[in-house]
Amino acid sequence: MKRQPNLLYVFTDEQAARTMAAYGNDRIQTPNLDRLASQSVVFDKAYVTQSVCTPSRSTLLTGLYPHTNGCIENNVPLPEDVPCLPELGDFSDYAVGYHGKWHLGDEIFAQHGFDDFISIDDGYRSHYRDYRDHDAHSTYHHWLVANGFRPDSVSKDGFRSFSRGYCARLPEEYSKPFYVANEASRFIRENREQPFVLTVNFFEPHMPYFSPRDNQYDPADIPLPPNFMDLPGEENPLKTRLYYLGYRDGGHSGLPLKTEADWRRMIANYWGLCSLVDTHLGRILRTLEENGLAEDTIVIYTSDHGDMMGAHHLLAKCTQFEEAATVPLLVRVPGVADDGRHVAEPVSQIDVVPTILDAMGQPVPEGLQGYSLMPFLRGEEPSLPEGDVVVEWQGYNNGFGDVIGQPSILPVWRETATEEEIVTALGDPVRTVITPEGWKLNWSSIGEDELYNLTEDPYETRNLYAEPGHEEVIADLKDRIRRWQARTGDTVVLPA
Image (cartoon, rainbow, N blue to C red; front, side):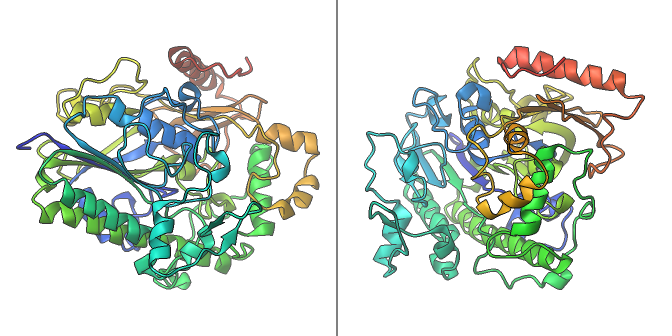
């Protein structure tokens, strides 16, 4: 790189790792991601810190675990005194922008050192801080209105906005990915003569699972996951069984999920969303190239969590299963990490912010809880800085009626467990450790534990926790979690 490095930091919402060729999917059409992967280092086993939006996003921007920065559940605002990426280094000479979904409180307002702030969602208004203007709208809202569209949703207090379902049905040239790519390209062009930090967040492929690309894939050609028929049973936590029953009986996004054909239709739509993102990511990457900035720009691509998308007959996130907890992680640092090599060892997104700061020549603050991967990427260290990865789950502490957003599922839940059991199961904090040797322990606060050997059972079809012969492994894994808790200040109480 000939000048101060730029940063293009892209993360999507709910994109599973298996949505591009670099992660083994040779059927989906993502040519821009395929090209980016060939120019990056690809982390094959990249784990989130928590498999739901707000907590994971808090880590991706602060370099802290959710239990440290306070964002332990969805819609918990990031405290204003917790610094984000632009506030963690000296970026006084940089243009700094954030474009897309935020989901860390005060959704549409510039904050935390991001000056050029482009917002796309008015659905978090009830979570704004009191001093914010609750009648303000996102920049995407204003753009749609300027293009002749009229809001379809009216709140009880008369606030008009565009619903997610409405936006998902718009022609592609008015879609959120199109708009975000427009703004990102504008930002790059405007700041091509100075260094910049640009964070871009695509809302897709997050639900609702439909888009202008619904017909891009023929459902008949869609393969079902290898563990599709491994239905949650008594060996799995009650929470997992409740999720299965809810999706089985309630479907999602207006689509049923009762037959294999139903699931293929859902996955086809999801792939369409991923291809939609790919197209507009490509526009941003081309803008870098057209302005002669590609060789001076670090590019990071990841997602805030995955999506089960039929694995174990489950959908979406909020589980410790691999499909929800692992995501793409592509790191391109020109001249250092740009050769398409793959890293097989597990890595955590807790390391992303330290890696970005180090790659940009900034000191890494001591308070961050991850490690820079740059010594490894430069070849200065033979292995990753820390072998084990820990994924946390805090549980839902606000009841269960809005967990999946479909009150109609509750009767089938009550046929399975008492209301007290349901609330306890959904509020159960879990700590998961994954080792380089392939062991995975989900340690539950209420004793609904799981042990998997990912080397022999990568699709998690056999819970070994109660099987004889694994006592020493379990004790070792619990000790690793205890040490992690002590190091990171995690106070969740786990049974002896």
